[in-house]
Structures are given as structure tokens and as C-alpha cells.
Length: 466
Image 1: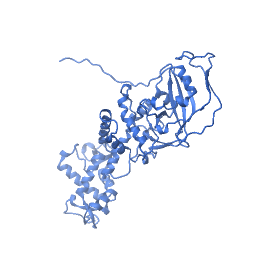
Image 2: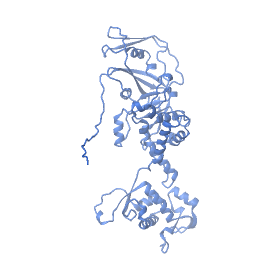
Image 3: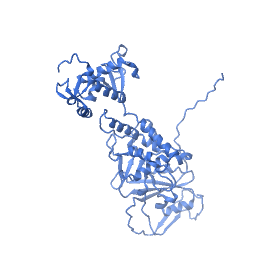
Image 4: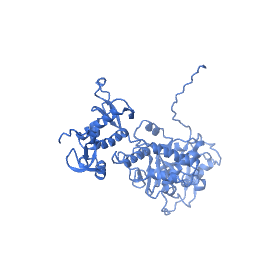
């Protein structure tokens, strides 16, 4: 290549054929000025080094951190051993060779020297020895603001037929069925026959003996989802909308119902008997970025959305105090309603973190992987039907105390054994819309409760009055 003397570095022109970065190459092909490329001496659509430097500078500011200059006398002992030299970073971004990368660096260095006031840091971020490290994806401040506005409007302005809320949720969940985690796991998983998630657990607390015995007779009804008139509002459902809340382990199902000491609990194991599609909010934490160019504004918006989605599980499962639940559950209820009715995603439910699971909270704070951590499941109304158990048969409940108790409270030995006698069952056909079958039932007496309490530092000082 001939020495391009006499031409200001920023005015030198580079053709699209010399650029390997696909988005940049396509942009220059479509919008470039037809001239002779100074680097390959061929005619073609070109871009000036100054224009290219503008694009590179924006990417460096948004996606990279300048570590330090290694050329100064005081930095003979290098504290920063990570990152790449600036020339390598520019070459990786543009893909046009070392000579082009050096020309871009010179333009940036001269620009920074001429106008230091535009920079938020001191030093020489573009000298030949400067190093840069790749940041996390760009911030999701705009989506964060939209989410807060979404919550505010649902709570204080328009609760039903909220068009802005619908538009936000569409933009957030668009294309979710095709997304994966960084290790290749799907964000939308399948549950049911032949899948990893085949069984879920649901618990119910009883404080009266008569109700406990009645549940032993008809556990598929008493442990299953409540009928719509009795369905109270929850994290993922409005009052009157019957859904099926469950957990992936019996211990977590027990923790979720927060039983008082002295009560009894039935924990049902339900088998998923038909294929279900679930959105895994825990997998979202490890959502992989889509491939694309850092010079593409649309791709950057996708990266911002991905960063927002990584924290969505925390937003939808954060602890809510009992007195605040009617209002604070509105945003998550709206999300669940949207996902339950979205025809493109066609979801049957959601996997989400449990607020009772201290293990998840610790992993979240320490940026540890969430794989293997127990979590909650909510099945939307369309996937919450439970197969009838012993339908039409005579069911009797007795105990081993040799006394008959019809007390409203548990006055007798909590370790008493119960016997459930069932006549030979009918082999009735299961309805097509039934998704769950009760296959096991455990009874527990709550003898005590443990709390996982973390210390909070407090400081009380006496202030002097001036």
C-alpha cells in the first residue's frame, strides 16, 4: 500500500470491501460515496476515517471501559493486566486491518486532545498503549423507566384495557419462545411426559380437624386449585381467576403456605399428564445476547431489552408485605394475564423464584448460577384442571386413636395415624383438558418454625446540639 502522505488522516476513505464487520460493510455499500479506497486503491462505495471514527468512539463509550495508559512513568508496575490494547479493540470492531485501526486511533487521540471538556475522564484514553475492557450490555434505563410507569399507571390510573401496558409487555416478550440462555437452555421449557419437570407439589394448611379429614377424602379438590368464586388474588392471579400454584419440591411447597405452629398440612404430589409450555423466569437470569453488530441501533435496543429481562424474575418475585399485596400484585397479575392470553407464545404457566427461598436470594446477590435451585410454578387457568380421584366412590376416614374426634381444633395426639378407605374406583376416562393427576399425598404436623434471618447493622449515636 502506498504511503498516504499529504492527506489528513480523517479524510482518508475506506471502501466497503475492506471492512469485514457485516453491518458496517452493508451500511457503506448502501450509503457510501463512490470514490477510490486509499487502502486497496479500488473504486467502490467508501466512508471517511473521520466518519468511521465517530461510530467507533460511540461504541467505545457505550460498551468498553478504558483501563489505564501503560506508557506513563508512574505506571511502570502495571496494575491492570486485563483488557486489550486500543488498536486491537478497534480492529476487532471494524475488521479492516491494523493500518485502518491505527488511523482511527489517531483521529480519536487528536479529537480528545483538542477538546478534553467532552470527556468524563482525565488522561489519554486513545494513546497507543491504552487498554480497554468489554463491559456488560448497555443499561436498560429506558425500559426500567417504562416499567415503573407501567406499575404506576396500573395502580393509580387505568387498570383495565390499559393500552400502554399491553404495548410494553408485547415489546418485552416478543420472540421469547426462540431465546436461550448462555449455556443453550431454552427460556420456554416443556413440562409433562418424558420431560425433566414431570411432578409438582402443592400444599394446604388446616387449622380444624373436620376440614383436615374432609381434605383426606377429596384431596384432588381440597389441595387442587380453588373454584373461581373462592379464588383470592395472588401474585399471578386476580381475585376470581383460578390458577394452580405449586413448587418443584415438597419442602418449598410447605414453606410457601407459611403454616402456623400446631396446624396440619397436606402436600399433594401432582403429575403433569399432558405437555405444557412454561416461561422460565429463572433461566432469564442467564439470557444470552442475540448476535448482531454494536454499530446497529436496533441490535443495541435488543441488548438493552435482554439486560432488562435478566432482572425480570426478581421484579416479578420480590417480597411483598401482606398489607401491600392488593396493589403491589397488580403488575405481576397483569403480566400473568398477558402471557396466559398471548396466542403467539401459547404458554400454560410460569416458573419463577420463590420469595421463601433464601438460597436463591444469596445466589442472586453473589452472581452465582441459579441452576438446581428450587422454584415455584403457576399454571394458568387453562392448565390447572386436576383429574378426579375416586369419583363417585365411598371414602371413609378414621384414625388410630380408637376414639372419634369431630373437634374444630386439633386436641388429640398430633402423631395419630389416619386411614382412608376407598371403594374400588371406577376407570373413568380423563377429560382432554385435564393437565394434572394427584399421585401422592403427605400429611405434616407443624411442631415448630425456623426463620432464616440475616443481621442488619444499626448504629445509634448521640448528636451534640450546636
